[in-house]
Image 1 (cartoon, rainbow, N blue to C red):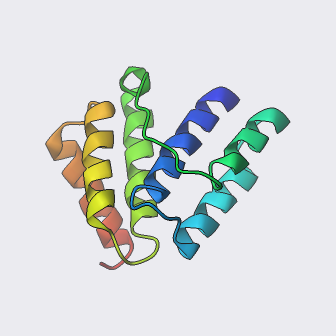
Image 2 (image 1 turned 30 degrees about the vertical axis):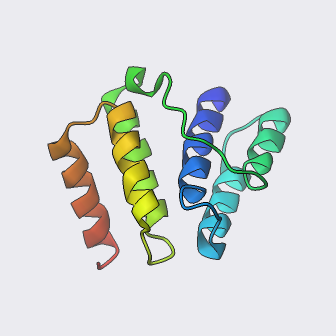
Length: 122
């Protein structure tokens, strides 16, 4: 379980680095995720490193997760992308690559995006 959580945090870290820098609010959100995640001490140390250097998107194995887990990862990424009220073009591109890596169909992805926007009053 903890290993899967670290893989998910890595995806989120790749998102916050998608535009080449970690915005303050995105960094704070990622720090909260790391602090509260079910990780071993070694995994938590690895997760903290994600804030120090650019993290590339690695979608290996994500399509094998259960549909609800894949949707949750995408929902969290969409939410995190909008946390600073500015979704950069690089983040939009990232979300497209993540969507493909998660094997989410366009309809499901749009439903998730619309639900996140509605939840945040956008």
